[in-house]
Amino acid sequence: MKKKITAMGAVVLVLTVCAILARASPAVGVTPTLIGRATYEPFKVKTDSLVEVEVKAKSHLDMVVRTHDYAVGGSTGWHTHPGPVFINVLQGQVTFYEADDPTCTPHVVSAGQGYVDTGSGHLGRNETGLPAKDVTVILAPVNLPFRGELPAPSPYCGF
Image (cartoon, rainbow, N blue to C red; front, side, top):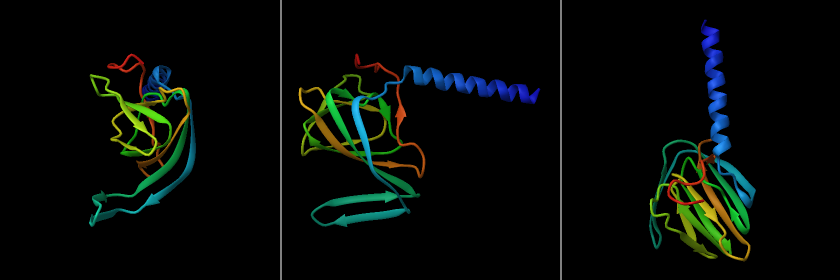
């Protein structure tokens, strides 16, 4: 009896994952390139110089660095991250939308500008007629995924 319950639980889990993935919003027209991934020990950094910043990691974490090349009309798809992501637009323009924003306000980020994603869920789109490119620094749990898919369309945006 216990084996049947375990087997049924596994089947339900697999079907649930398949249903979520079927509704997922995959990237289209965006090519990611991994530059590197490194594990950091817990740390605390605080500066009181021209750049005032405080960063603290209570546990080990991975830092993932990637570039993304956006074709005209390309989209990252709706997704989340387990921690913050620092996005630097290198070329063109990328427009970001937050999954929890009921006004679906666009955040337009041009070359030379940055955007901080909290990890709660967003989508990046190239809404221009020219290619775009960014580089991201993603903070993630050690050796675990750094991206989770969200269903589309967004409840607040029509895409």
